Length: 470
Image (cartoon, rainbow, N blue to C red; front, side):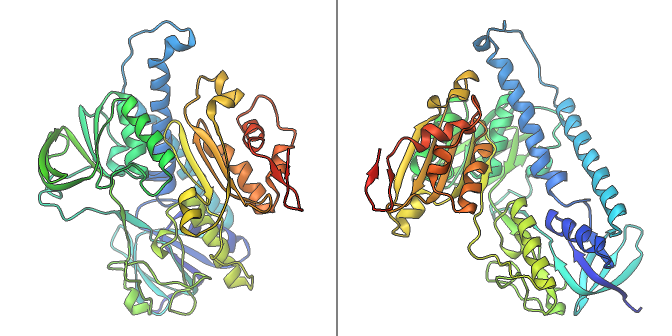
C-alpha cells in the first residue's frame, strides 16, 4: 500500500492541532487530522467546556440555597442530574457541529480512526469499519494529549472508579462521593457535586489543597470547602480499595501513621495525568520520549525526528487548552519561518471553583524561591464595589511589583470571576505597562475589573529616581 501524500498530517485532534488543521488548509495545503473518538479533542467534549457547563449548573443550585440572602423566599427544589447532563450534551453537540462546519469550510479532512506511526512521517489509520489508510505528511504534528492516571493501589482498578469523563456523564447525584486528588479536577468537581447535594470527602496526600500555591490561597480554599461541608482528609495515602463505584466503595487510608477506613457510594480519581504515547509507534518514527514519558521537544516544539512536531500536554506543555493553542502558534512559526518559541511565555491559569482562583506570573512562593524582591499589593474582595453588589466578597486580589520600578511581576486573584480580572492585568504585563497605567485608567464603574484601581492604589509607586510617590 502506497501512503497518501499530505502537506500536513495531524495525529490527535486537540484544540491546538484542530486550529492547525484549519489554518494550514485555508492556505491551500492538503491536511488530514486524525482522532480516534472526539471532534475537536478533549476540551469541547469531555474536559474544559463540559466541566464548566456542569459547574455553572452547580452555581445556580447554590444561588437557590442562598435565595433568602437576596430577598427571595426559600422553596424546596430538587436536582435532576439527567437534565444537568442533557444541557451539557446539547452544548457539546453544538460545538461538534461547529467544528465539523469549520473542517468543511477550511478544506481540512477530519478522519475518525485510530492512528499509529509505521515509519518516518507515515501514519496508519484504522477506521471504525476496519478499513486501513496510510498517510504520509511533509510535516506531522502529534497532539495525543494525556489520560487520567490510576495509582497502583490494590483494588483501585477493580473498583471501576470515575474519572472526570464519567463524572460529567452522571445521571444521578452520588450519595457520598470519595475524591482522590486535590488538584484542579478534584476541586472543581468536588464543589459542584457537593452543591448538587452529594456528601463529598476529598483525600489528598499533601498537607494543603493546591499545595504549590501561596499559603493565603491554600488557606482560603480550605476554608471555602470546609464551609461548604466538604470533608477534607489531608496528608493521607490510599492503601487499598474494595467494592465498586456506583454501588459501595470502601477505602483504607493511612494518615499520620494510623489507618482509617472511608466508605462511600462513588469514587472519583483525579490524581494526575499520563501522556498518551504508548502504542502509537513513536519509535518507528524516530520520536524520543523524556524520562516522564512525554515527547521530547525543543523550544520550537520539534521532536527528535525532523519535520515531526508535538504540541499540548503530550509534549509536556502546561495542561491548559490556551497553551495548546499557543503551541500551535509556535509550530506554525517553526514551519513557516517565524521565530516564536515556548521559552519565556506568560502562562495564565484559572481554577473554576466558585469563587475562582486565577494567577499569571510570579506567586510569592515563586519570587522567594528565585530570590526576586517584590512589593506586595493586596486587597480583600470586600474592597471591590461590584463584588459587594453581588454578595460575592470572599477572597482577595494581590499583585507583586518590582521593588525598583513599577513593572508587574505577577497577579493572583481568589474571588468572583477572578479569571476575567486576570486578563486585564496579563495584557498590561504583555505590553510592558507599569502598574500605574491600570491604577490611573478610567475603568467602568461598577465592574470587577475596576477593583484594580484600589488594588494598585494600596502601595505608593516608585519614581524613576527610586523615591516613593504618594
